[in-house]
Length: 191
Image (cartoon, rainbow, N blue to C red; front, side, top):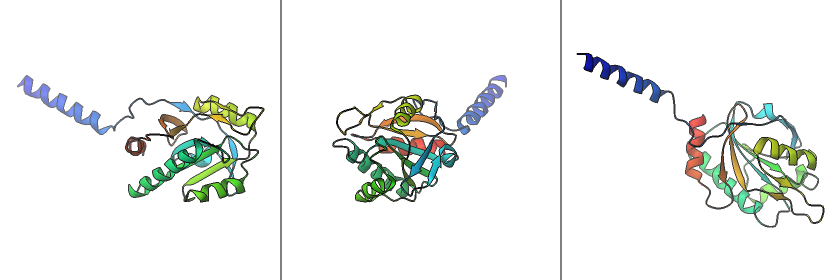
C-alpha cells in the first residue's frame, strides 16, 4: 500500500514538473541595456517598444561586402518559417553597425532588395558608432568595430533570441547552417 501511494506521489510530482514548461537548452540570460534608435520608417524605437514580444536580432550593415547579405537572406527565411508556423508577436530586429551610412532610407532600400516584410521586422540606426560598439559589447557580448580606414565594419554573425522581458536567451549561427528548427522551437518555448 505504501509503495503504491509513493508511486502515485512521484507520478503526480513528475506530471506537475512537466507541466511547468520546457527550458531552452544552453540558455543564457543576458539583459539588454536600454537603447534609443531610429527605425527604417524614421520612428523612434527603444527597448520598451519590444517588451512583451519575443524577438530575434542581428547586426548588419548595408555596404557589407561578405556576410551581411547572406545573414539578411537567412533572416528572410526565418521570417517565412515564422509565418508558416503561425507564430505571432515575434519580431525581427536588425541593428546597423554603420549608422552614419545606414540612414532609414538606405536601410529601407536594402531590406526591399531581400523582400523583407516590414510587419514584424525593424531595421535600426540613428545612434553613434561609439554607442553601437559599446551596446553590442555590453548587451550582446559581441564585437562591433569600425576601423579608421576602409568602409567594412568588423562584427560577428550571430542571431540572438530575446525573451519578452528583454533578455538574450540564446545565440545561433546566422551566416551558415542556420538552425531554423531549433530557433522556432526555442521561440515556442518562450511564448
